[in-house]
Length: 398
Image (cartoon, rainbow, N blue to C red):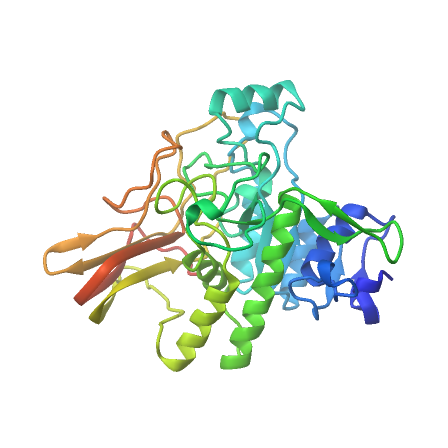
């Protein structure tokens, strides 16, 4: 009944009591703007509010009925032990199973607020040992969700230094070296609705506040795509679009385990969708069959900076972590590889080294870890060949 959720746009399930945190989070997604300073990202959207009990069963049901985006500003997983940091545990595996079975459904999750935390001896020791890296836990380490870190407000972006990391946002990598968080958004000093009364507001901070901003952005991108093409994007397309168009952030070029691929830029993402409609950009949803390779040529007449990326929804692996600290494992099932060639020169996607998490990303070989791969060509000119291949077999497609 909050004035920001006018016309009964929010339906509450699992009702027990009102939550300031939940009201603040959902307000960031869809508050109508009774107070313009608190207007949500997708301010005409409708929302369903659940508590976190039985969340996977509820996510499965909603996804089966066509839900495109959900937000999860919480962490659930095993009790706090050292091994859970970066771990692909049963929660992460369950989330990947749900997302793989529902190829249009994208869960957006918060990265956590554990960096610099001394809330427990375990957290304090992990921060001191890993210097703020290797902190993301539980379902937030799933392959097929979009994990969001928190940064300060960026009123005007001029260069990567415009994006200032929060003091608390948890950093990756995952145990198998995947890039987490994938992207970042404003999570510091976020003004939104709270549940004290129907006209109350407050300012909070946390990755809980950053995640719903991205969830709202994602549903707007789906609306824009559907308006132009009369169908929705697969979740892997949507996820890839967000990472492909993110603004550069961090000390080095390319992705990192702090900012991921950078600051979410919904205008750039929407413009790319529009450019697809006019033929000025390519967004394809394709199937790579087992034992096959996809190729496409690209001619660049005028020297330009070109970005090419692939993203897919990966099946959940059979194995998952039940208590091993920092295992040397891989949870990738379908290992696709992107490369671009020009004459005899090969251009590879960005990759990070989990054993040297603060080092800059490299572009010297195939990426055998992530389900999103991007190649950036600077001052490109001439004829290029894009190739997507794979290793092993492809048990299922996404």
